[in-house]
Length: 511
Image (cartoon, rainbow, N blue to C red):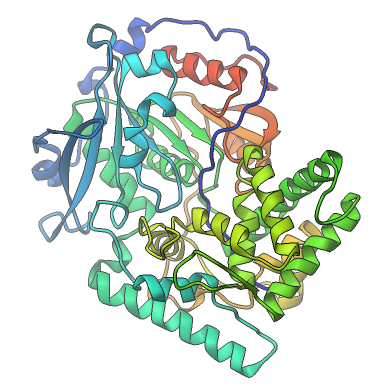
């Protein structure tokens, strides 16, 4: 059972109790309401004045105001072609206490920041909502910003759920055809702009939006992949960083193997927590103890690989392949509130029906039950990932790669290590990954969850240590990301930071 690394997506709500941290109470202080003088900050690139000087034409739309931002296709050639990006703003509820704009990004890469900002009342705390315009910018190629479209819906079904059997010549050829079709579709859709769909370019687009909005510094909340985007911005424009929260951290400088091994370990840890819960609840469909449940899950996935389960009510997908089954299980790991649904889907699968797991997989891929896709999430994810990060083994032997996966994650290592990947056949060669130090920035709050499946806690520790002014907040809990997921301690700490710049006290701040 071998699949390529899973996408980094944000999950649903999670209800957990919490503690309190010192220094969390605070109104909107003068130092954040009064922006740093523009003359004290680095000048905006004069070559970009045609973009930084534009005025957004805001129009009322669902939940707030919408506009379009023009940016250069290639920031090194600002006089050339342009790209139009979708912007959404939910104005601050208390204009008298307004701090400025808080740009938000939910992750992916490929999740819509516009749609995320529409849910501003849920995305940030009430006091933050009063003091900030909550702003979402769909990165180029994502959502409503000239979205990349590599395959039609039927093609995406095959690409996501198709079975690759590396032990057979037919399986290898089938996998190669799937990859080739996807790559060719992306090339045809984006043309010469394919190589411009990168996190660094998206961060430079954020800088243009900051200038257009009239904020001297960027206030930012990024989750999951949104942390990569935020950290990249901080490295490029450290003195422009205002209040920045990075929650559920994906480091900027991981190669494909490092990312895959880290995620495999994270999903392994989360799966063990789910299986412990399943066994403790009683009547777990996978087994009566953790060891038996692990074996039961392996057996189920192996059966899906050799004899896919029938599926009802999901359009053209009539069989639960190992690809769809893997995404279905992964989907249930993003929040412990999904565990009962995952247990029910696994019980259904044990009875010979893959519909429940397919439903969870569809949620993961943003796929409607009728077969249509609600967004281009999975396509944008792949384009950004391949453009950003070096593919291949990084000089490691095949045996070394397999050993790294298997040691980190006996179950998920085999599922995620992949014989090959789309990125190995990608026509764009990524630039050397940058390590985010953000020298000279204001304090940046880094939040890590101990049993986060997609962005393991160790990554938050790593990034907080690499940032010159990183401050780590540890959340002992389950699920992907922490802020606004039901923990009063985390919410209080993040709100206090966004409102006053106050960071949690001590090197071991935790909730």
